[in-house]
Length: 277
Image (cartoon, rainbow, N blue to C red; front, side, top):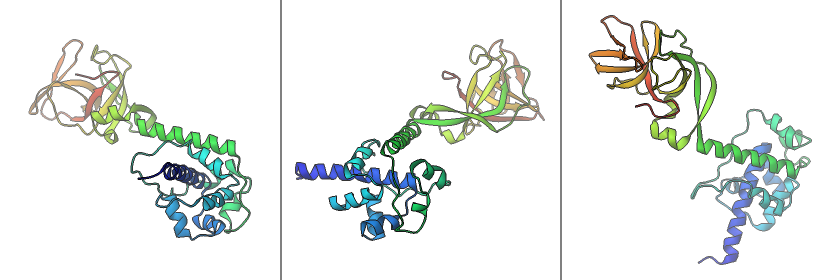
């Protein structure tokens, strides 16, 4: 059974490793530079960053010194990061595509890290690092709880048809991850703008409509984003797979498909500020 001192040491070790990983990520620090400064092997530093080994207290102080921080500073920074899920392993982050853009924000001499190991240690601004860590925390939380879906250039007409079919994303709308995954796979979803009043009150004019493009099979009495004779529509489909009729909700107008018609279901309309029945 672990004593209180052992538990406290393990907790501090986890906080220290979280802070160390964040500092390495922000500054793109090579492992061999840390290892040379601390007087240990690069493999041992790798184990620390992966959470497989908690360094002894004297080694933690040496690693903190590399960033001109105290051991207590590292623990404080570690507390600014969200707690990982149970059993989650720490992994060494890959280098950022533009290292200098981030390095310039936290140190005066970019070459002190990217240059030869053993060069002058970088000077750090503790308040700035804390702010950057808070930004990382916020970003992680957003990515964890929300999923971005592209709002397409394409539009869907609920009247005379639309010729706008562009797949380019104008912007992105955020949906709660738990909610949207219950609807299907977000990777196959997009949002389009709908115009016209023929599908009112189901879909009012000017609505944004969430479309699941993985659901292209005909389902009786459901609303779809579709192409018919070169025009894009949002309409309800009734009938059978061999005898489909396009229906408007507002007035019940019906348009049976004829042999030779250009017709394709692009996706199922599943939401527009509420579920579509």
